[in-house]
Length: 383
Image 1 (tube, rainbow, N blue to C red):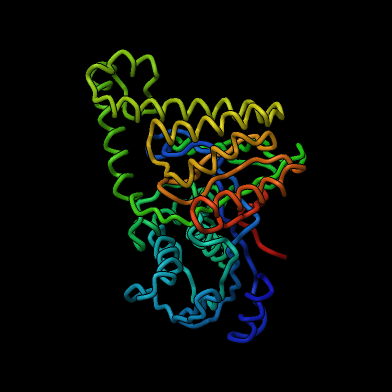
Image 2 (tube, helix red, strand yellow):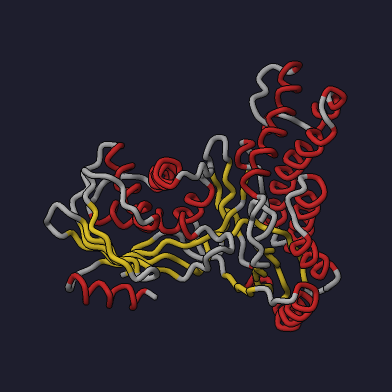
Protein backbone atom coordinates (compact mmCIF):
# COMPACT_ATOMS: atom_id res chain seq x y z
CA UNK A 1 0.00 0.00 0.00
CA UNK A 2 2.86 2.40 0.85
CA UNK A 3 4.35 1.92 -2.65
CA UNK A 4 0.96 2.60 -4.27
CA UNK A 5 0.56 5.86 -2.28
CA UNK A 6 4.07 7.08 -3.19
CA UNK A 7 3.70 6.14 -6.87
CA UNK A 8 0.41 8.02 -7.10
CA UNK A 9 2.07 11.03 -5.46
CA UNK A 10 4.92 10.94 -8.01
CA UNK A 11 2.41 10.76 -10.90
CA UNK A 12 0.34 13.69 -9.62
CA UNK A 13 2.80 15.96 -7.84
CA UNK A 14 6.36 14.84 -8.65
CA UNK A 15 9.27 13.52 -6.58
CA UNK A 16 10.29 14.12 -2.98
CA UNK A 17 7.31 13.08 -0.81
CA UNK A 18 7.79 11.84 2.76
CA UNK A 19 5.66 8.88 3.83
CA UNK A 20 3.85 8.29 7.15
CA UNK A 21 1.59 5.59 8.56
CA UNK A 22 -0.95 5.44 11.37
CA UNK A 23 -2.78 2.22 12.26
CA UNK A 24 -6.29 1.10 13.00
CA UNK A 25 -6.97 -0.46 16.40
CA UNK A 26 -8.62 -3.25 18.31
CA UNK A 27 -9.91 -2.99 21.88
CA UNK A 28 -9.29 -6.04 24.07
CA UNK A 29 -11.44 -5.23 27.12
CA UNK A 30 -13.22 -2.06 28.23
CA UNK A 31 -16.32 -1.36 26.14
CA UNK A 32 -18.76 1.47 26.98
CA UNK A 33 -16.40 2.47 29.79
CA UNK A 34 -14.93 5.51 28.02
CA UNK A 35 -17.89 7.88 28.46
CA UNK A 36 -18.15 6.66 32.06
CA UNK A 37 -14.58 7.89 32.73
CA UNK A 38 -13.28 4.33 33.09
CA UNK A 39 -10.47 2.33 31.49
CA UNK A 40 -10.01 1.01 27.95
CA UNK A 41 -7.39 -1.36 26.53
CA UNK A 42 -6.77 -0.70 22.83
CA UNK A 43 -3.87 -1.86 20.69
CA UNK A 44 -2.60 -0.58 17.34
CA UNK A 45 -2.75 -3.18 14.54
CA UNK A 46 -0.82 -4.06 11.39
CA UNK A 47 -3.40 -2.36 9.13
CA UNK A 48 -2.90 1.37 8.57
CA UNK A 49 -3.61 4.56 6.66
CA UNK A 50 -0.56 5.75 4.67
CA UNK A 51 0.07 9.40 3.80
CA UNK A 52 2.56 10.84 1.30
CA UNK A 53 3.14 14.57 1.71
CA UNK A 54 5.31 17.44 0.49
CA UNK A 55 5.05 21.24 0.94
CA UNK A 56 4.00 22.91 -2.33
CA UNK A 57 4.91 26.55 -1.65
CA UNK A 58 1.50 27.83 -2.80
CA UNK A 59 -1.72 28.84 -1.03
CA UNK A 60 -3.93 25.88 -2.02
CA UNK A 61 -3.40 22.29 -0.80
CA UNK A 62 -3.97 19.40 -3.21
CA UNK A 63 -5.18 16.13 -1.70
CA UNK A 64 -5.89 12.84 -3.47
CA UNK A 65 -7.62 9.80 -1.93
CA UNK A 66 -6.36 6.58 -3.49
CA UNK A 67 -9.29 4.60 -2.01
CA UNK A 68 -11.91 6.95 -3.47
CA UNK A 69 -9.87 7.76 -6.61
CA UNK A 70 -10.77 11.41 -6.12
CA UNK A 71 -8.84 14.68 -5.76
CA UNK A 72 -9.76 17.93 -4.00
CA UNK A 73 -8.16 21.36 -3.75
CA UNK A 74 -8.37 22.68 -0.21
CA UNK A 75 -8.41 26.36 0.71
CA UNK A 76 -8.29 26.49 4.50
CA UNK A 77 -9.60 30.07 4.56
CA UNK A 78 -12.81 28.88 2.86
CA UNK A 79 -15.69 26.49 3.47
CA UNK A 80 -15.24 22.82 4.32
CA UNK A 81 -15.29 20.50 1.30
CA UNK A 82 -18.35 18.58 0.12
CA UNK A 83 -16.64 15.16 0.24
CA UNK A 84 -16.66 13.64 3.71
CA UNK A 85 -13.25 12.00 3.28
CA UNK A 86 -11.75 15.43 2.58
CA UNK A 87 -13.39 16.87 5.71
CA UNK A 88 -11.04 14.75 7.83
CA UNK A 89 -7.98 16.42 6.29
CA UNK A 90 -9.63 19.85 6.35
CA UNK A 91 -10.70 19.41 9.98
CA UNK A 92 -7.25 18.35 11.19
CA UNK A 93 -5.68 21.48 9.65
CA UNK A 94 -8.40 23.76 11.08
CA UNK A 95 -8.03 22.22 14.55
CA UNK A 96 -4.26 22.78 14.34
CA UNK A 97 -4.81 26.41 13.34
CA UNK A 98 -7.28 26.76 16.22
CA UNK A 99 -4.34 25.89 18.51
CA UNK A 100 -2.08 28.55 16.99
CA UNK A 101 -0.25 26.55 14.31
CA UNK A 102 0.44 27.93 10.85
CA UNK A 103 0.07 25.09 8.34
CA UNK A 104 1.59 25.92 4.91
CA UNK A 105 0.01 24.50 1.73
CA UNK A 106 0.91 20.93 0.78
CA UNK A 107 0.37 18.15 -1.73
CA UNK A 108 -0.86 14.84 -0.29
CA UNK A 109 -1.95 11.37 -1.35
CA UNK A 110 -3.34 8.83 1.09
CA UNK A 111 -4.95 5.39 1.29
CA UNK A 112 -5.02 2.39 3.55
CA UNK A 113 -5.63 -1.26 4.25
CA UNK A 114 -7.71 -0.85 7.44
CA UNK A 115 -10.86 -2.92 6.68
CA UNK A 116 -13.84 -0.56 6.52
CA UNK A 117 -16.98 -1.21 8.55
CA UNK A 118 -15.38 -3.71 10.95
CA UNK A 119 -14.96 -1.25 13.85
CA UNK A 120 -11.19 -0.89 13.47
CA UNK A 121 -11.31 2.92 13.45
CA UNK A 122 -10.15 3.78 9.95
CA UNK A 123 -11.32 7.37 10.51
CA UNK A 124 -9.13 7.81 13.61
CA UNK A 125 -6.24 6.25 11.69
CA UNK A 126 -6.73 8.84 8.95
CA UNK A 127 -6.88 11.78 11.38
CA UNK A 128 -3.81 10.49 13.20
CA UNK A 129 -1.85 9.87 9.98
CA UNK A 130 -2.64 13.33 8.59
CA UNK A 131 -1.97 15.03 11.94
CA UNK A 132 1.31 13.18 12.50
CA UNK A 133 2.47 13.86 8.92
CA UNK A 134 1.68 17.60 9.07
CA UNK A 135 3.22 17.94 12.53
CA UNK A 136 6.47 16.33 11.41
CA UNK A 137 6.67 17.93 7.95
CA UNK A 138 6.14 21.48 9.21
CA UNK A 139 7.70 21.03 12.67
CA UNK A 140 4.50 22.26 14.39
CA UNK A 141 5.50 21.02 17.85
CA UNK A 142 2.34 19.14 18.86
CA UNK A 143 2.71 16.21 21.28
CA UNK A 144 1.08 12.86 20.48
CA UNK A 145 -1.55 13.59 23.12
CA UNK A 146 -2.36 16.92 21.47
CA UNK A 147 -2.58 15.16 18.09
CA UNK A 148 -5.07 12.67 19.61
CA UNK A 149 -7.23 15.59 20.81
CA UNK A 150 -6.97 17.27 17.40
CA UNK A 151 -8.25 14.05 15.80
CA UNK A 152 -11.07 13.74 18.32
CA UNK A 153 -12.16 17.38 17.80
CA UNK A 154 -12.03 16.89 14.02
CA UNK A 155 -14.70 14.19 14.50
CA UNK A 156 -16.77 16.45 16.77
CA UNK A 157 -16.60 19.67 14.71
CA UNK A 158 -16.20 18.56 11.09
CA UNK A 159 -17.72 15.06 10.87
CA UNK A 160 -20.46 15.37 13.51
CA UNK A 161 -19.45 12.30 15.56
CA UNK A 162 -19.06 12.90 19.30
CA UNK A 163 -16.50 10.15 19.83
CA UNK A 164 -14.24 9.53 22.81
CA UNK A 165 -10.47 9.71 22.50
CA UNK A 166 -9.60 5.99 22.64
CA UNK A 167 -9.26 5.40 18.88
CA UNK A 168 -6.94 8.33 18.22
CA UNK A 169 -4.93 7.54 21.35
CA UNK A 170 -4.36 3.93 20.28
CA UNK A 171 -3.38 4.98 16.76
CA UNK A 172 -0.78 7.44 18.06
CA UNK A 173 0.55 5.72 21.20
CA UNK A 174 0.43 2.04 20.23
CA UNK A 175 3.59 -0.06 20.19
CA UNK A 176 4.44 -3.48 18.84
CA UNK A 177 3.83 -6.16 21.50
CA UNK A 178 2.09 -3.67 23.83
CA UNK A 179 -1.46 -2.53 24.45
CA UNK A 180 -2.43 0.84 25.87
CA UNK A 181 -4.17 0.86 29.24
CA UNK A 182 -5.81 4.26 29.04
CA UNK A 183 -7.54 6.04 31.93
CA UNK A 184 -10.32 7.98 30.17
CA UNK A 185 -10.67 10.37 33.12
CA UNK A 186 -7.07 11.56 33.46
CA UNK A 187 -5.69 10.40 30.06
CA UNK A 188 -2.86 8.76 31.97
CA UNK A 189 -1.77 5.64 30.16
CA UNK A 190 0.48 2.64 30.65
CA UNK A 191 1.79 0.28 27.99
CA UNK A 192 1.04 -3.29 29.05
CA UNK A 193 2.73 -6.37 27.53
CA UNK A 194 0.61 -8.11 24.92
CA UNK A 195 2.54 -10.48 22.71
CA UNK A 196 0.26 -13.46 22.06
CA UNK A 197 2.56 -14.76 19.32
CA UNK A 198 5.27 -15.38 21.92
CA UNK A 199 2.69 -17.36 23.94
CA UNK A 200 1.79 -19.46 20.88
CA UNK A 201 -1.45 -17.60 20.14
CA UNK A 202 -2.97 -15.49 17.38
CA UNK A 203 -5.57 -12.71 17.38
CA UNK A 204 -8.36 -12.92 14.81
CA UNK A 205 -11.54 -10.93 14.18
CA UNK A 206 -14.74 -12.35 12.74
CA UNK A 207 -16.79 -9.59 11.17
CA UNK A 208 -20.51 -10.44 11.16
CA UNK A 209 -21.04 -7.70 8.55
CA UNK A 210 -24.16 -6.78 10.48
CA UNK A 211 -24.56 -2.99 10.44
CA UNK A 212 -25.08 -1.19 13.72
CA UNK A 213 -28.61 0.07 12.96
CA UNK A 214 -29.49 0.45 16.66
CA UNK A 215 -26.07 1.56 17.81
CA UNK A 216 -26.47 5.35 17.87
CA UNK A 217 -29.95 5.52 19.42
CA UNK A 218 -29.23 2.77 21.96
CA UNK A 219 -25.84 4.35 22.75
CA UNK A 220 -27.65 7.49 23.91
CA UNK A 221 -30.09 5.39 25.96
CA UNK A 222 -27.21 3.53 27.70
CA UNK A 223 -25.44 6.78 28.40
CA UNK A 224 -28.56 8.24 30.01
CA UNK A 225 -29.08 5.08 32.09
CA UNK A 226 -25.53 5.29 33.45
CA UNK A 227 -26.03 8.97 34.28
CA UNK A 228 -29.28 8.12 36.10
CA UNK A 229 -27.43 5.61 38.31
CA UNK A 230 -24.68 8.14 39.06
CA UNK A 231 -27.32 10.74 40.03
CA UNK A 232 -28.84 8.37 42.62
CA UNK A 233 -25.49 7.58 44.28
CA UNK A 234 -24.34 11.23 44.09
CA UNK A 235 -27.31 12.26 46.29
CA UNK A 236 -25.78 10.21 49.12
CA UNK A 237 -22.02 10.18 48.46
CA UNK A 238 -20.10 13.46 48.06
CA UNK A 239 -17.66 13.69 45.15
CA UNK A 240 -19.36 11.15 42.87
CA UNK A 241 -19.27 12.55 39.34
CA UNK A 242 -19.21 9.45 37.12
CA UNK A 243 -19.44 5.66 37.38
CA UNK A 244 -15.68 5.67 37.85
CA UNK A 245 -16.31 7.03 41.37
CA UNK A 246 -18.95 4.39 42.19
CA UNK A 247 -18.12 1.01 43.79
CA UNK A 248 -20.38 -2.06 43.69
CA UNK A 249 -20.94 -1.59 47.45
CA UNK A 250 -22.32 1.91 46.83
CA UNK A 251 -24.45 0.72 43.94
CA UNK A 252 -25.89 -2.16 46.00
CA UNK A 253 -26.57 0.17 48.92
CA UNK A 254 -28.77 2.49 46.83
CA UNK A 255 -30.14 0.05 44.22
CA UNK A 256 -33.68 0.27 45.64
CA UNK A 257 -33.77 3.92 44.56
CA UNK A 258 -33.02 3.12 40.91
CA UNK A 259 -34.68 1.25 38.09
CA UNK A 260 -33.50 -2.36 37.83
CA UNK A 261 -32.25 -1.79 34.26
CA UNK A 262 -30.23 1.23 35.44
CA UNK A 263 -28.69 -0.97 38.16
CA UNK A 264 -27.72 -3.61 35.60
CA UNK A 265 -26.13 -1.08 33.24
CA UNK A 266 -24.10 0.48 36.05
CA UNK A 267 -23.07 -2.94 37.39
CA UNK A 268 -21.66 -3.84 33.99
CA UNK A 269 -19.50 -0.72 33.77
CA UNK A 270 -18.10 -1.07 37.31
CA UNK A 271 -17.33 -4.77 36.73
CA UNK A 272 -15.86 -4.11 33.27
CA UNK A 273 -13.36 -1.66 34.75
CA UNK A 274 -12.31 -4.26 37.32
CA UNK A 275 -12.08 -6.96 34.63
CA UNK A 276 -9.74 -4.76 32.65
CA UNK A 277 -7.45 -4.13 35.64
CA UNK A 278 -7.45 -7.86 36.49
CA UNK A 279 -6.69 -8.61 32.84
CA UNK A 280 -3.69 -6.26 32.91
CA UNK A 281 -2.38 -8.02 36.04
CA UNK A 282 -2.67 -11.36 34.21
CA UNK A 283 -0.79 -10.02 31.17
CA UNK A 284 2.01 -8.75 33.39
CA UNK A 285 2.41 -12.38 34.54
CA UNK A 286 2.23 -13.65 30.94
CA UNK A 287 -0.99 -15.50 31.89
CA UNK A 288 -3.06 -15.54 28.69
CA UNK A 289 -5.46 -18.18 30.05
CA UNK A 290 -6.68 -15.91 32.87
CA UNK A 291 -6.68 -12.96 30.49
CA UNK A 292 -8.87 -14.94 28.08
CA UNK A 293 -11.39 -15.63 30.87
CA UNK A 294 -11.66 -11.85 31.44
CA UNK A 295 -12.31 -11.39 27.71
CA UNK A 296 -15.15 -13.94 27.89
CA UNK A 297 -16.47 -12.16 30.99
CA UNK A 298 -16.55 -8.91 29.08
CA UNK A 299 -18.78 -10.46 26.39
CA UNK A 300 -21.08 -12.00 28.99
CA UNK A 301 -21.52 -8.57 30.57
CA UNK A 302 -22.05 -6.78 27.26
CA UNK A 303 -24.61 -9.36 26.14
CA UNK A 304 -26.58 -10.01 29.36
CA UNK A 305 -26.09 -6.89 31.52
CA UNK A 306 -25.51 -4.05 29.05
CA UNK A 307 -27.59 -5.73 26.32
CA UNK A 308 -25.71 -4.40 23.30
CA UNK A 309 -24.91 -7.70 21.57
CA UNK A 310 -26.88 -9.42 18.79
CA UNK A 311 -27.63 -13.01 17.80
CA UNK A 312 -24.71 -13.17 15.33
CA UNK A 313 -22.15 -11.99 17.92
CA UNK A 314 -23.50 -14.31 20.63
CA UNK A 315 -23.45 -17.21 18.16
CA UNK A 316 -19.74 -16.64 17.42
CA UNK A 317 -18.79 -16.40 21.10
CA UNK A 318 -20.79 -19.57 21.92
CA UNK A 319 -18.75 -21.50 19.33
CA UNK A 320 -15.54 -20.07 20.80
CA UNK A 321 -16.46 -21.14 24.34
CA UNK A 322 -16.85 -24.76 23.24
CA UNK A 323 -13.47 -24.85 21.50
CA UNK A 324 -10.53 -25.68 23.83
CA UNK A 325 -8.16 -23.97 21.37
CA UNK A 326 -9.76 -20.57 22.04
CA UNK A 327 -8.59 -18.70 25.15
CA UNK A 328 -11.08 -15.83 24.94
CA UNK A 329 -13.60 -14.15 22.64
CA UNK A 330 -15.99 -11.21 22.84
CA UNK A 331 -17.87 -8.68 20.77
CA UNK A 332 -15.84 -5.55 20.12
CA UNK A 333 -17.16 -2.03 19.71
CA UNK A 334 -20.45 -0.28 20.39
CA UNK A 335 -22.58 -3.33 19.68
CA UNK A 336 -25.59 -4.55 17.66
CA UNK A 337 -23.21 -5.81 14.96
CA UNK A 338 -19.58 -5.54 13.99
CA UNK A 339 -17.06 -8.18 14.94
CA UNK A 340 -15.77 -10.47 17.66
CA UNK A 341 -12.13 -10.50 18.75
CA UNK A 342 -10.65 -13.93 19.51
CA UNK A 343 -7.41 -15.13 21.12
CA UNK A 344 -6.65 -18.54 19.62
CA UNK A 345 -3.86 -21.07 20.12
CA UNK A 346 -1.76 -21.14 16.94
CA UNK A 347 -2.09 -24.91 16.50
CA UNK A 348 -5.91 -24.65 16.66
CA UNK A 349 -6.17 -21.58 14.44
CA UNK A 350 -6.85 -23.02 10.97
CA UNK A 351 -9.42 -25.55 12.20
CA UNK A 352 -11.16 -22.87 14.29
CA UNK A 353 -11.43 -20.42 11.38
CA UNK A 354 -12.85 -23.22 9.22
CA UNK A 355 -15.34 -24.22 11.96
CA UNK A 356 -16.55 -20.63 12.48
CA UNK A 357 -16.89 -20.01 8.74
CA UNK A 358 -18.86 -23.19 8.14
CA UNK A 359 -21.20 -22.88 11.13
CA UNK A 360 -21.83 -19.15 10.65
CA UNK A 361 -22.65 -19.63 6.96
CA UNK A 362 -25.00 -22.51 7.78
CA UNK A 363 -26.80 -20.41 10.42
CA UNK A 364 -26.93 -17.01 8.68
CA UNK A 365 -26.47 -17.78 4.97
CA UNK A 366 -23.22 -15.87 4.53
CA UNK A 367 -19.59 -16.21 5.58
CA UNK A 368 -18.10 -13.88 8.21
CA UNK A 369 -15.15 -11.74 7.11
CA UNK A 370 -11.95 -13.11 8.71
CA UNK A 371 -9.35 -10.50 9.71
CA UNK A 372 -6.13 -11.66 11.33
CA UNK A 373 -4.37 -8.86 13.23
CA UNK A 374 -0.99 -8.39 14.91
CA UNK A 375 -0.44 -5.73 17.58
CA UNK A 376 1.89 -3.23 15.95
CA UNK A 377 3.50 0.21 16.01
CA UNK A 378 1.53 3.45 16.33
CA UNK A 379 1.90 6.52 14.08
CA UNK A 380 5.37 6.81 12.55
CA UNK A 381 7.40 8.10 9.62
CA UNK A 382 8.40 5.42 7.12
CA UNK A 383 12.07 5.90 6.29
